[in-house]
Amino acid sequence: MKIVVVSRDSHLYRLCRVILSEFPGRDWQLTMATPRTCPLDAELYIWDGQANLELPRTLEPNFSRHLFLLNRSDVAKLHENAGGAEMNILLKPVTRATLSAFLSLATLAHRDRTISPDSLRADRDEILQCLIQANMKLQEYDQDRTNFLTRAVHDFRTPLTAVIGYCGLLLSEALGPLSEDQKEVLRRMEHSAKRLSLMSSAMFQLSVGRQVKMQPVLRKGDIRQCVEQALHEITYFAEGKQLSISTNLEPEPGSLYFERAQIEQVLVNLLENACKFTPRAGEIEIQAYPFFWERRAVRNSPDPADERRSHDQQSLNAYRIDIRNTGAPLPPEHLSSIFEEYTSYAGGQDRSGGGLGLAVSRMIATQHDGGVWAENTDRGPKFSFVLPVRLTEPGLTDSSQPQMLKLSEAS
Image 1 (cartoon, helix red, strand yellow):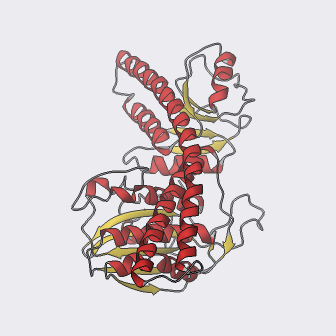
Image 2 (tube, helix red, strand yellow; image 1 turned 135 degrees about the horizontal axis):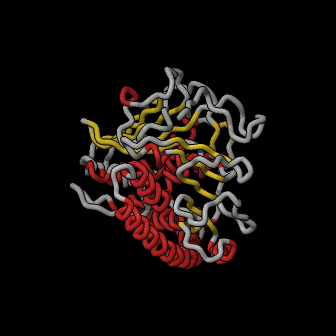
């Protein structure tokens, strides 16, 4: 199946590649084009619409082979340009889950078309149209909810920051001496307030991330400093459960460029998750090492031996960090969804509290052209994320995209 992304947004193109790679047994070829260079022989076109979108004259009267990604305010204009014809429309910003659902249906329909009678195919297309229309309404409601949540969380963070500041002021004894019991109570209050602040920040980031494309400010950095800061942040939590934390950080194979505050947040989120679900007096192990990362490989079981390589490429092109703990195994059926927003499920322990932090971690890793995933091992659950090793500093190359060390993206 030939699919064309008509857009200048490389992030949308990469997202489509990742989604399509998760559909086993389906042949596809994905290319990127502009309206002027768009080929005419594709089975599916994904149009990244703008306010001034003009429909190419080569489009057939029915739009079953076309998916339009539009801002909410541009839907009426596109319908007007198309003479009121029914279309497949997804509202921007498009979520991964929504785009994945559409691409899954489209690729299945293409695979089965040779064995499906015309009448059944027509009925299926009509049902798909109804689902698309219903989905667009749900997206409108979701955007309204997100806008409200963003405003509410923003207002919530201000008094919370004040509470943390007052706790710090009292702990400094600037207003008078305190007993050790009083200091302990204040430390617990401060710790709980900081956790609540992190949760509200996560909700704010996820809400804003849907509306605004945030690009990290990439600078050459030392991942060891990030690990040390993250360990400092979760010290109180780990000491309270008498957890043993060990680290083994190997040298990077090249330069790592990242936004330090964001990568520290990923580490804090993963370590807090490990602390929460590790039994008292348990162990947490942090390992970091050079790694060959096939970006098209499915991330549910990323053992290097199981990866699909597009070429006989063996060079290490990424730096991987594993955080393993001695807690209960993750339910296998949830390994692929644990990084979704507000994920909630029950296993040996209820891990639903990690939903926001893990969703934010995936968002940050994706913005850094990296990845994050979870798996079970014989020594306990393990959460891993990778950062690409780059040849040159981002922004100093002729290409619009940062060059990465021999990173294969061939179809």
